[in-house]
Amino acid sequence: MAKVELKLLRTWSSRFSLRIVWALQLKGLEYDTVFEDLSDKSPLLLQLNPAFKKVPVLLHNGNPISESLVILEYIDEIWKHNPLLPDHPYDRARARFWAKFGDDKDNGFESKVDRFFLSVPSIHTIMPLNDSYK
Image (cartoon, rainbow, N blue to C red; front, side, top):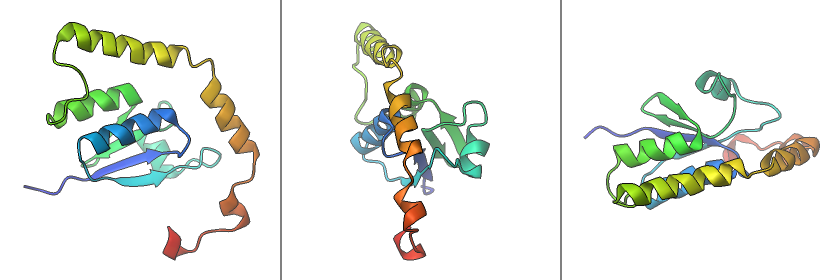
């Protein structure tokens, strides 16, 4: 079986990204993490998600998937073990409803948090990491 390439572009603070981290861990999948600085988006992020230019983005064998709920469905369809959703269609619909409800009731909290952290200089701009820590 060929080695699966999984790479997750995310920030440490994004609850949408953490959904993907949890799903990948529940499935027992190995993946690489690329932390993005939203104040200085990488060319890779802009290439992989040109429509929204935001995280999370899952890169699976070179194919980018964007938007957290779409990524979750993709993960569950590709890797059938440890299902993320219940078996019964009605229960799955209810789980999807509450996930969307939570997204819609966000009230901009995450964007406020992101704006705050974008206004604070990154520790990496003050003390850049050398290559041994990247």
